Length: 82
Image: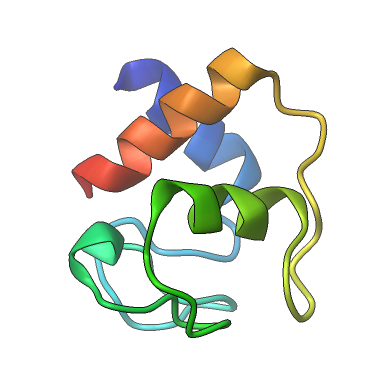
């Protein structure tokens, strides 16, 4: 979890809250995996759809294609824990 939190702080925290669902610049990610749909795309909240949003995002979010598979897995595990 600690590694995923570090990745989140480095790559995501400028635009997304981890501790609330309100928007910062992008939507807050607290409780994301308890929601029915992703805030920006309205796709179902699945690991695959969150991964797609990170690597090939909708709207103005930058793509994070430089994450290794291990980094992606730890980031997704962290987001699931929020």
